[in-house]
Length: 313
Image (cartoon, rainbow, N blue to C red):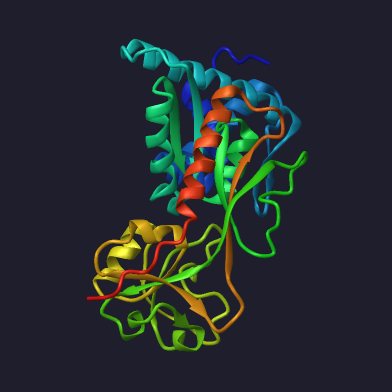
């Protein structure tokens, strides 16, 4: 076993595979070919003298040896990043917290929390990253993020099946809404009836499991017409504003809706609840992590205060 020849590139590739869950997703996130990722993983496993990743149909999982290497690799990469910050002349920090969030949380909640932290804790550095809820749960397990904002839908299962369970704190639980053009006939009221959702054109997005129907109202009793498939939430809302279709949206996005978009509740059927959770590993958090968590809780309370819908022009 000789780790002296293991490159930083191999360590970064290994971390990406663990966080993304598959070689294919890791290659896409890094801009590498899948064969290049496979070569880096093979090299680090040769240096370890052990299999680090269990290859499964649903992706990869760390072996016992892999958990050891992941823990050490994260520490090495964090130290390299810290050295780069010092060499760039950045002022000293009172702590660094690595925060992950799913896309719609980054539109409203995260900016509010970071703005508050700049006032209350100007020396605290928050390193942010966006990802899907499954990817962020893996990043927590891998030790490459300290806190993560996760999304959950009924029946509100744990974000992963690993043990011990992640420490979870529910920040908000609100009903899913509908985003539609302000000029649409359904935008004239204060809510949309679920029966009126039939026959609409939808702006959907790929979900973590490859389901293209994310963005379509759950349980719709017809095959939806997908007008556009878009990953980015703000791009979806801009397409709604342009009259290209409608999409589902968490209530918190009402504060980030562009002109020409109304985000309204849906009535007449079972409520489609969505839960926003703050997750971390179960051990006691550091003081910087506590401060970031407190800022996120405060921002969530502020964002959870319902805003009356603006009447269409």
